[in-house]
Length: 454
Image (cartoon, rainbow, N blue to C red):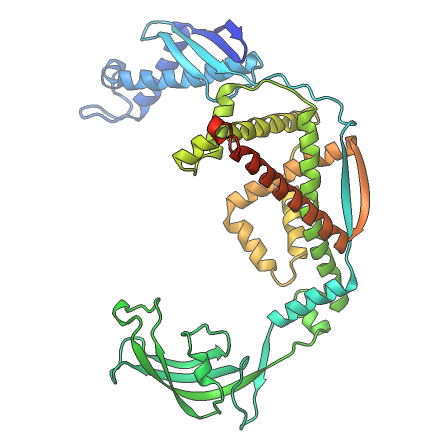
């Protein structure tokens, strides 16, 4: 194989590749021989079909397959040997080809720009550590306890109230006639939530155990038999039992049900969970700040084709008119994403950063520990969703790059309370909204000039 750089201008490089006919013929013969050992034709024993018959019958298809393989192999090697970083899909143009001929073709490539990362010590950012107050931990545990609602039998003469669980049988009739799906046995209903049929709960209030009550309601919109929707229905209900809600005691037994060793361990897990929730939100602000400074400190030209591809991804689900309206905005965002991505990738490659399987497993285990009582749900999620594992790998890779950057920049570490954390998050949201409103007002005055619109 002979490779020559035909031209190199801007982001466009054209390579000329020549594969001699002897190399092609050798691969062609190998493929025909392989086929000869497999093919079965009438009148010939397996593996004994003459080569010329194989060639006459399958030659064109085999040649096409061989050329396709050679193109993939040689084009990849040509790009690799010339150390070209490709942006987008290469274009191959066949000049000469055919049986008994050399294969002569060109590869047109759009290349990535040369990336030179400047020293990172000029970047400044703040990283926050949140101190979680005792009352916030207690409040979260109390909320968990309320969600784990328990019930006990009400006394024999007790009447149903909102919040009680009623166990009852029912039989519904429309105009005195039964219908499909009109009966229920040992149905459990927590009064006041209105989850069965709208207006049903209220009519069971004040009932006693073993009492019969008639509830009159219209069948809901989601009733399976569409012809019965909104029909006035009489439900004859027999109260089997009434249970009243009881407070869940927050103690070691409760903590164990939640997957912790004891109450202190549960408090520790909840503290980490709340801390992580705040840190994740604040880290987004820190990350955004770092990446904005990284982008602003570097200037580079980008391949137009790559920018177009990224802009199309951003507008994939947009209407045509919205795509046109936001074209300039999307192009700017596409350039920003590509630029930051190239810089991060260069930092990762130059520092040989990688993510191995153990790091992914450890991260999943870390998530499990911060979600007491939901261990199986977390594990099932990752086991059943390969895309979630892939997404986690990408997030860990980016996090590893950012950790490296943080070690090289001027990073101020600050301890703050949850109140201060809330103020920072609100301030960031307010600034973002204020900026958007300001931009919208400016744009309104320029609509007639066809300036960009946010």
